[in-house]
Image (cartoon, rainbow, N blue to C red; front, side):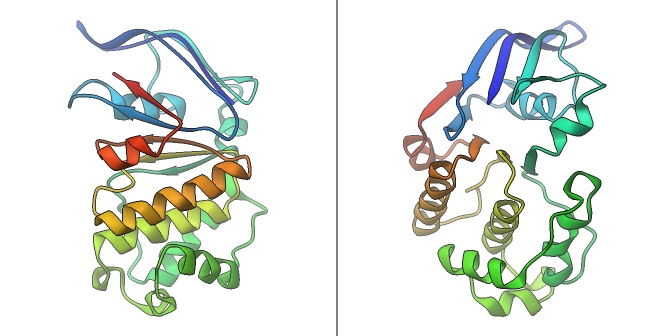
Length: 206
């Protein structure tokens, strides 16, 4: 599903990493870990086409990441950044926004399906009608994980999915991700969470 060959990212004279080779199969759940400043988030941004590689290549679902293919590649990816700043006052607006993006054209939002996933992630249906400012960081993380799953993309990329979660919620998210991976979704996450790393198929250290 994802091939990274001999990849390097550098900013001026500073190399974040070099010679990185990663092969991730369809349906695998993989965690990227490492010290602060090692290039974890930059690697995710490179896979999304936001940061250019200094050298090397990235292939997603047999498509080489390049300017000609970037729109097609982004249609295959659901992306949840660590700092989620959506211009929405209400949760009901927040959950619908990803369905309005160009890359998700043709995917229809379903409140019924959303509430089914809410139940799996121990989220109350009442959250749908609340203001974004009224919900916790952990609830917001789980809500956006629920929304990303409804997009049914072959690749989910997520930065620190459990940073605001307690131990019980981490276990629920892991179980939910395992269900998605069993259905064929590939999950790539940056995380420092030990429990999360132990629940993944592989861990990449930068």
